[in-house]
Length: 441
Image (cartoon, rainbow, N blue to C red; front, side):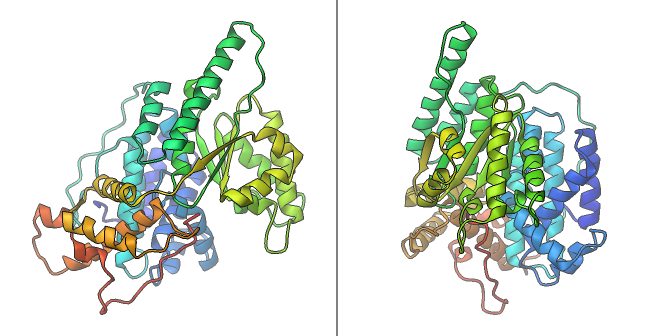
């Protein structure tokens, strides 16, 4: 990565771009701080350094932010998603600013190999989403091009055909692709019939995604939001991804307000609720706060039925119980799409694609090593699928950097190539790190 400044400098640059894009400073800073915390979560001393960039920030604030930001380690942030959906002229500049935030996360606390890998993959995800410049593979500072003011040009929105083509290019997911194509055909005809003045049954657009972690549910939800916009069913087409913690407040009465505010932020687009069943059940059964969130959600879905789509996601069995827990949910979620686990070959394709997006190359021996790792890895319900591949790459990038630590002038091939040894356990002279499993939902 190219950045050499600290987190405050990266935040300042991001806020400048955000202002040009019409994004509030608080919103931009909030998600950037969450991204940085999620990337530096395993670095000793990171909470204290992070808190210096947050007035009144505490260690607990750091870990709370890390929980919110984990989803962006391998996907574009919420603001960037909206800028891309709206064809903003600032989307590339904002993605580059987020990449600098990721680079700055490597300066928090004591640098570790894991954080370097996290940051490289996260930065690549932001840049790839916006079609921005690729990352520099070198770990040393790179010359910076002069910053140019973004030209105010209107970026044409993607067509339904283009978005479906993107869907079809995803690895695996054959059943998902067929169902999305079917859903698009049904909704297109329904819209044409309505425009022709013909009677048409009301078809709910809300969806249930079921499957194990890392099977592409969020990626497909993002494409669905763009497809619905292209069909004229949504006005904006942004994706707002949340979980229970972002819907439920600490006191009864506050939850309804908090949930309504989240839904309002998704108006015109798609609200994606991961592990939605956490709202209606837990270790001790359903709670008043979750029920209040669900009741508010049902009401908001009705009030905003013409310009809002809700997608709920999670494991198959708990999702069935969630839909059955409230009559309002059962009447609105009638279409379920199942996401199957990836095969070993598909996971290898995903790993290769992630590496290429980060400007790394997996040599043939490293792919063979990855296959060995897959054979030895249990495939129970907690297996991370695509996120497992991402975690492997993040760790490999960190080991790659450590392997080159004493190479004064590495060649371009050395800077790019991930070797088989980079996929093995970390050297014993380095402190081990526990990989956070919390984001594999």
